[in-house]
Image (cartoon, rainbow, N blue to C red):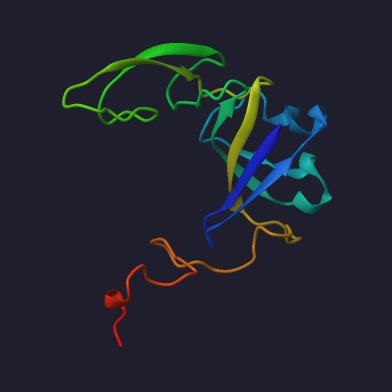
Length: 147
């Protein structure tokens, strides 16, 4: 299983591949939004607290908050729902989504760092990006530069 870690304080993300299922097992039967201790992932995660923010199963179907199952369901989604973008006014569509409970059928589990532990995770705390979309290449047009 892959774990996509995000650190909202700096805006950094890191993708971690976990081959050992025993390390991921404490996250099973937890719901989206719950906070979990990350000590089982390894020594570098000692003291970290992570919030489960979502994920995708092995076929690519996203997890949806509020669907209290660990399997896949088909919901009629309209404008304003997560996991759906309408193409026309008033359009509704029946889409497959995954429930908000974590189990072994997930390919990617997205988590956010709530409380930082003792050690630094290499690559997750690097640079500080100000909120609002920081682009390292600079402005798209030179006219938007204020000189």
